[in-house]
Length: 298
Image (cartoon, rainbow, N blue to C red; front, top):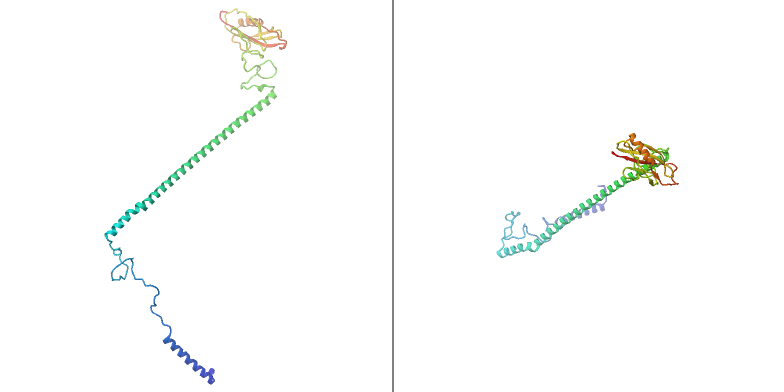
């Protein structure tokens, strides 16, 4: 070999091979030993499936359920166990069960009361909401009525300004009546629709007549009897001066129920017999009326 070209190299190689061979032999005979199976460490526990047992025959498998029973106990031990079982429910199990039932009932009562409170609260909220809605509707209705009333009054004032006071009246009828040049129904709201006086209230009489003249008291009156046998009422329109004297009379005006000529003439004469008090503040010609009632046999 080329690497053993000298005597020293050959000696070194031979010595190395010898030492390695001797080391291998030494390791083979006196090397590390081990157990098969290895030795277990700790305490060995006997095979079994129960916490008690007796005898010398070791079962190789788990015992059947029929055999897996505790050994029969003596009579004193059985009596002691029976006493313990009887005492257990009285001392431990029974109170726990009763306490649990009481707690369950309390929870159910609390839940029931809570549901009742919630239902009552919802009912009160619904009632309050309904009341507020009714109040809102009522306010809107009243506001609409007030608005319509204001609009109607504004229209009446506007028409009154345009037509000279005809819309001061609150009625719904149509028509015009009076002795002025402006349209409207001249007179007073509490007056007699059959009266011809626009200044006063109806007068009083004995039942056979009546009169009307604003602010003037009657001083004297008379009556002319009819020349026929008729019945009815004749209204006479009169014009009175400041001295209270009738200066003009027109029988048979509005309110007359019998226009027979034999009643109109005496009614006109009767009107001229009426006298009123003197009043310098009265109109120069004040319009009024005299009502003459005629009966059969008079």
